[in-house]
Length: 189
Figure (tube, rainbow, N blue to C red):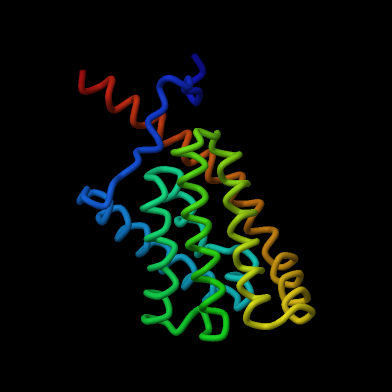
């Protein structure tokens, strides 16, 4: 068997964690910390690196796919709030849109992977579509029709490199985590 291939019956993730499971809060804390640190580094590199590469959504999607919708929603809700509290980013005028988008990314990724048993890539694509639609719907409610459509298009156009990176890197990371888990399990037996 190829060293990067894992059969469907050997899949470790998602490990759907319930609210009563302490591990959920541990993983959420780690993912929120990473999701706050990486966008901060991107903004140091260039002011448009955040909107272009969407680093705040990376660990939201990963949390949903790895640990289920609860982890995804918590990371999606907490990351923008913690980031804003520490750094003032995202800006207050976009904070509601970012919170909505991130929460729906995490919810959709977790439900599509854990409940509907879709593959990683299909879950991620579905989550990105659902998260973006939720953000656009929220903008339409707040801004009105034509202005929100222009803003939504500009946001989507600027963020496509980040979406592409997420769809390429996250499945690879999950595959590597699966492989590491199996290697660890084989060494302890």
